[in-house]
Length: 150
Image 1 (cartoon, rainbow, N blue to C red):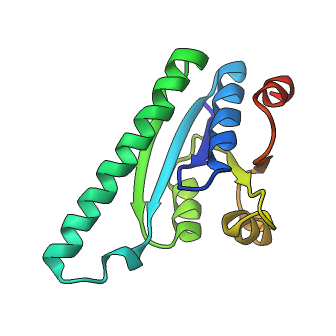
Image 2 (image 1 turned 45 degrees about the horizontal axis):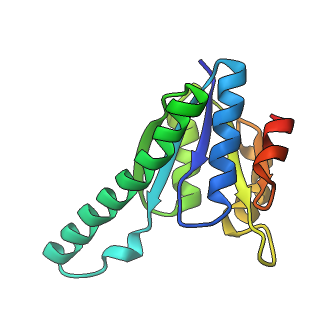
């Protein structure tokens, strides 16, 4: 089954990328893999404090994932999977694409505040070396417009 890989982060544009990935998966019989990356600089503390912060980050990610997963299951009949990785976001996205041969499309949300956002900028710069296409979803598309184009 082909999966749409979408990145879960704290950006506003993440919402439209999630919606797009779920709608496309539902209409094409695909799946959704949701990747969240914990940056390494969040844990530059003593070992015990870093471990606690890492666990809190994982709990926060799981809570956000559950909100999106419930919507995907209830509205799109898609049961997404969650992948949590640690490190540089771009490096971890590329690594996840390499590790999961079922991933067929990377879906990113483009920013609405003065540029596409750091992930879109960095990944499109290197898109020729990715083994899958990238779909960039404008962050300010309405739900109705997303439904119409998926």
